[in-house]
Image (cartoon, rainbow, N blue to C red):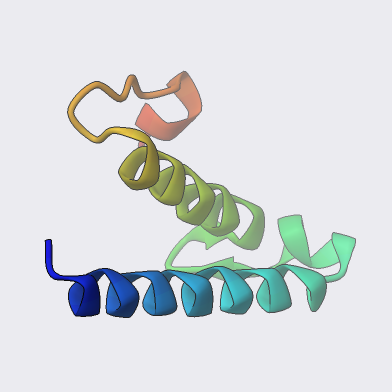
Length: 73
């Protein structure tokens, strides 16, 4: 892969994780279960984000879903 493309992907990934960290720092504990977005609690939304990051940054072809990630509302 071209070094410039690798640099761009790394920079975008660093921004993604910095934004996720700032978002998580700004959430107070009661909001995790009391605030909902599209019928999912904020805690479930955060879990989904972290789960997706884990899946795509580890190996999406060999990733096994957890029971929590499989559940539907």
